[in-house]
Length: 272
Image 1: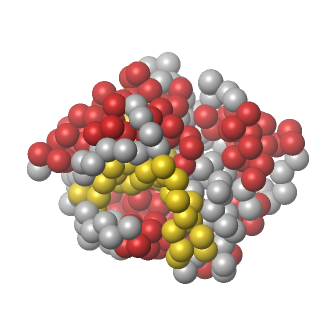
Image 2 (image 1 turned 90 degrees about the horizontal axis):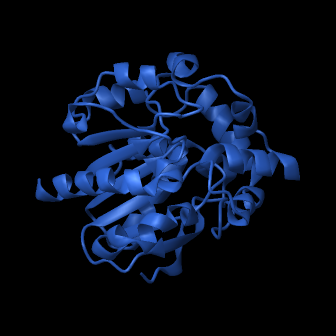
């Protein structure tokens, strides 16, 4: 499957966008902190990318995108959400399904009110927490310290890449992390800790958009018990889904198990 790449001019900066060759319903794929759209290569290059128009932008300050024009404006969950809505508008897409991984899931939740054309949302590695629930939704780990650290050493970059994606590990993962504008980590984390943006526990309890929640059962950073107890207004298939022998990034470490679930969600939203 051929994946094309282009640059989209936005008020947040130049955004690099990968697109699969599919012509079906657009599917926006939003990556996590210090990653880029390349992390979705299994889906973009596979059967799903051949069926759907999969769109994987690099967030401002990440991957092949430019650093943010205004760091304070862009480097937050709500700033990124605004940037992703602007990308869709520039691509003349008014309806899309959204997949968000980790930080990308939080961005997807922030997009619900900003993008009326959202047909459905799947989140992975994303506990929908209120500001007071951060300690419940996330497990304490060294990773959380790195998530908001501005200046990374080579060892930090490798540790972060290995812990977020797991196996298989390759040099491209390290390069994604090393390239990221460190201000993006620091400012996003500071604002998240300060409670900026919408209360995401309220979003999922009230939003009528179909919401799929899929996680690796060996998820190292998110408390899956918390995720299963959250009140959801429209939880896809009436339950959260777990993938065995998978960690924080099931689309990467277990695509053979993740993709059939993803396909089922996409098909169900398409039918609706």
